Image (tube, rainbow, N blue to C red):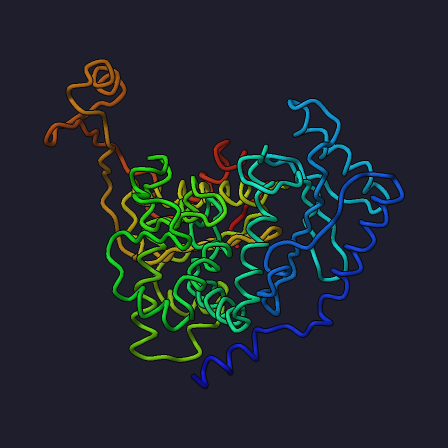
Length: 416
């Protein structure tokens, strides 16, 4: 399809864009050799697999330590992270805490995540989940070498998912990871074929590329089969590679697939950031609340989830105070996250009903009655009628951002 060729030409980077990555790998390997450390640095992620996008400046590097590394088994987790940190001191990287500590290094436009792993040949040898990552890379690269055109197909689906805001397995996204999209393209053979199948997916999809399991639902851990998409990991058959995919993101993918097939156009591959000017124009005469938040420092998955919790907390309290939310959204950026709420501009009554406990919870019900003057019963629940404190959403939000719940989860937050 001509459209696909046009999009690929726009999102596929020139090889020289990542010369800095190759030079950094060579520099780290030279440091390891000089210090007589039995480890090797290699590219990981989409850069290693040849599926990286033009404006993707995050590069994963794995430093693979020999499995026979001489530390006690219980010290392996700390040992290789500490040793790598000491070796990298001349480069002045930033330590990031995770399931195994790793390091970040910024050079020009590129942000490197340098991750210590043990060199394993089989998933059963893994001490930490990160030890598996090079095996995933190796599997995908082998498949892509057999069918070189697949790498561009992966680029298409990654850009498609980024445009739909469903890319990433982080807790605050619960979407499709790069690894999952690799597996979907390997399984279906092309981006277009994937969309044709996704358009008719049911409520649950099970994929086992290498036919490892007879009955994945029964053989996989029950906690890993709650997601609507189950992909038996080709190199770790006891794992559902798509366990992080949430139902809402799964449904968005299906919907976007149907919409694209009905009317293909380049707009499905355009990443749209929150545009405050456009939001203001959309809000017109309605109430509009826009907040800028500076996330805490640390692991992106953790700090991103905390920003999401702030958004959900504010949204919940706006609803509890009877404000009618017409549209709301948020966007995570490491230095400046945004969230907004468009609310129906209307006059609210002077009284507000506050939710209380169910009648059967006698202790809670007694406390609730003692706290409020006017308590009424609706169904099986108590409600209290109180004088409305907030007639406009702005003052409510100003008070909310002062609360400990919010202040503990972001470094800074204010109305824009």
